[in-house]
Image (cartoon, rainbow, N blue to C red; front, top):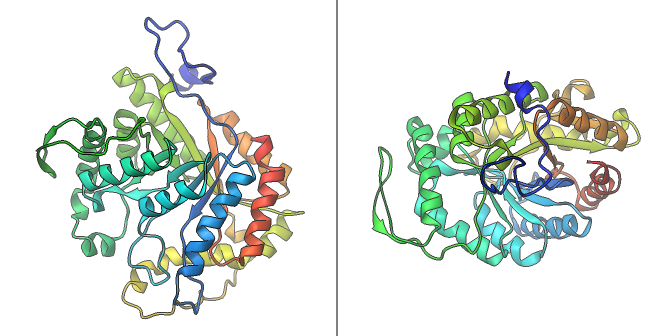
Length: 367
């Protein structure tokens, strides 16, 4: 029922045809985004200067090459310094660039005080002249929650309240909030952003996806293709239940894109860097009490194709990658935007630039 109802949704104007009132809807920015920038050390390093300098340089290069957005990603206490301060970096990116959309993919919202989050996001929106997209998620690491003094057991309830608090805080007018997690006195949060800050939710579980449909502006998901399509159906079902126009929502799917003359050659070239990125997630909590410098990952001993998680990693020629992305878009009952999660922290800078250029020339113009 839901699939039939929404199968042909493709927003092409700012007004919903046939609506009783003129309702502004989201016009998708087709093209390709780039990320997820994480400013991690390489094995043996102890100084993050290079990592942060390259973060800025990559964002500038992404803008120059025509990418529509650039995304950062958050974790805490990791030995390689996986980026903990996304809005600080976003403010720097705002000054280094002039056009590209700046997305957080994602800020682990329940670990941040909602009013401080509102202030920092508003500041970035001012510095960027309206280019911030605030991606929020729950996080999964107990080490992070304990370290930052947040209650992991109440993270869903905290997110529910944060999504109510932020839009009110950004009006600049005094607000009051008395919830089960946050009890805030009456006060005004300033500065107020000059334009509305869209909020996207990165999540996997159905309650979180439905929360996005109720209280946010869309999804930022790296779920495998079939799971992503299920997430979209949950959103559409929730929109129908509450009477919300799904044309007001964004649906962004991000995946690792590895271009090359063939799938085999792309996997051969990027195997170690992709493995290092994937392995680090299993090592994060253990690394929180490990001294510097960060170690090298263990050797990858499986066949290269084992790196290809269905629907989240694509390797091959530009045309093969484009076809895989367009196939996902064809299956979805909504307009889907794409972000290449092709920042591989273990790659040498010159190799990273070459990867970005291949995506800009061969993939971005076709999606």
